[in-house]
Length: 273
Image (cartoon, rainbow, N blue to C red; front, top):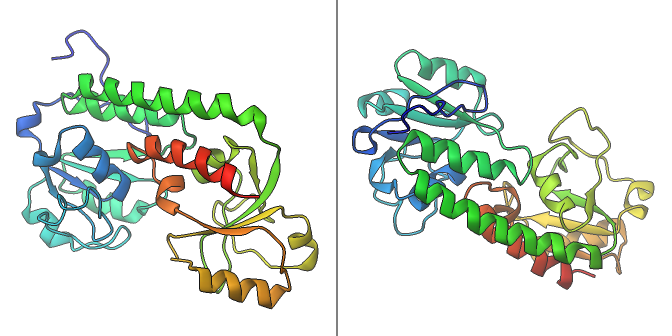
């Protein structure tokens, strides 16, 4: 298996020896990766997930939960004897990774920063778990969806977008994040007052809002609703400013969800005026 090929490397540069997928016991602490593992036909090798791993619907329910993405039930996870635990730089903490390193043979760290990083993600996981052929099929689907967006994007105009992920305090995303780079594909340029912080708190001022073309209210991690939009309009006296709910999973989830996300962004950008 993979004879003569370099070992797949994760986001930290760690090389991982390919394994027989039948011998793998995988714990995913990243919701989007859990979905990707199922789409790589590895669902039967996943032994645990987080409570936020909700996709694929109807398939993850039978898997035990070991808690959240930041704080887990360590002894429950240890008892499952995983061979691999998959984490993400943004979603999981360094302290959590260090605790797991004491007894988990393989920590696989992910950190996509832009849409095309999904290709490396597919191939890395496919290479580790003997799913290279399926990974290439996902790469092909991703490339088709990306080309469709890139072909469509020149018809659009640049717009300054305030993408809200939290309420009280209001929080947004910096231009360096995966979310912002997904939005850039449809020429939505994210607004942030502090680019040094990946997910900064933002102060709503008349000057800031005047320079924004669209306000997007994400469905995660805070679940914004139409009522929140109405409240926002009234509070800041913006009766005609374009605003809408945006599916946070489609924009922020990398992995196989990103294929659907690209198509969703293309459609959403045409509907938002």
